[in-house]
Length: 226
Image 1 (cartoon, rainbow, N blue to C red):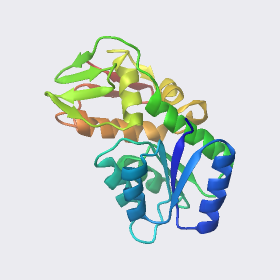
Image 2 (image 1 turned 180 degrees about the vertical axis):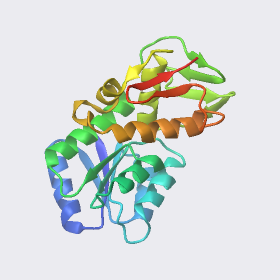
Image 3 (image 1 turned 45 degrees about the vertical axis):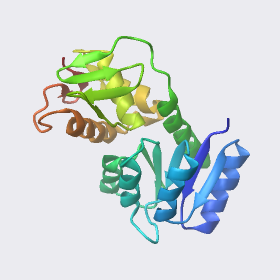
């Protein structure tokens, strides 16, 4: 079935251009002009990926990300004119999976959308769940439980954790994580690693400021200690 993308942008000309280009490449497209419509559409049309502008007329795009992340892990790719590094980190930290700045190349945007969707649909290899402290990482179901309660992860958070969990106690280099989780085009996006490692620690560690399991090796990479 065609991949369904929800485009959230209040610029009619841009929204229309995105719709035409994406449909020409086989995507199904729904467009909405504001945040509240976006939250309603995620619940009703169940898109495969959300393409979200942060500068919306009724609410800030960060609030939209928070609203979506409150109940679903659908991939979110931000498309924004905000080019400051802090804005990118804030969006990723809030729950976005990727960040594309305007102006943008259409081919790059589609590649990033495909990568986000691929991460959310990749089948997990059938192996026994990994047990890390009070965490149970179920590769088959793509779920993580902590103390018996399931922890909601985004597709990108899961991909990051899965890569480390499949190499327990082994250092996984920054380059390998970026290549396998995001793709070869992301090898210089090292700030993604800091953001997602922090997100995972907040969700999985008893004391995120002093992690016992998700360990950073400065300048080298990350490892998951049993």
